[in-house]
Image (tube, rainbow, N blue to C red; front, side):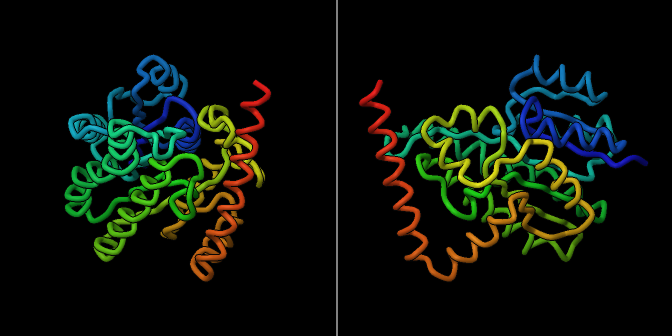
Length: 261
């Protein structure tokens, strides 16, 4: 029986790259995204099943999971990849906070609610969360994104700690700068996000696919993230001071751009 996977946020970027890699390896793939037209083009190219819809809402998640099981019979891996940002701090509205938390955190919770009981009955399953290095460190210039990605990591940790002895594998992919539409639209943050080498979406997908051979919780396509995370844990005040220096540089760059506009 072929391996099966569901990939959300699959119309472009990392999600599309993951779906492409899986299809190339002979997996049966279900792809999901809000952008129905672009999603169908991806599905047609890969021979995948397209299930357009809003996977941040419970009804959308349930429809996706039910459709995947109806068409494939089982789901081995669910890639909870869909995510959004705001590029805002305290000026982010309550609606923007809600939408970001719904997409970046609660979508994972809802997926687990619908998947874990089935996986327990089947003897196992795997949830792979695209959490971002922001979930281990922080994301200057985007408070809702930073907080929600920390929440995504926290939920994935809880899920792993709770169910790993019952065959549920949970993994968190935490890349830094990736050459996607989100990076291109990051404005003044782009220089900050590209201080270290950026990766292509295909390179992140390769790291995600390799991780399926094991059960390591963190998948770090940018290996330097491990060192940053260790520094943050060992010397939090020094790490925060360093992040604040980066914020000051960002402030100066923004001010210069505004003066020259």
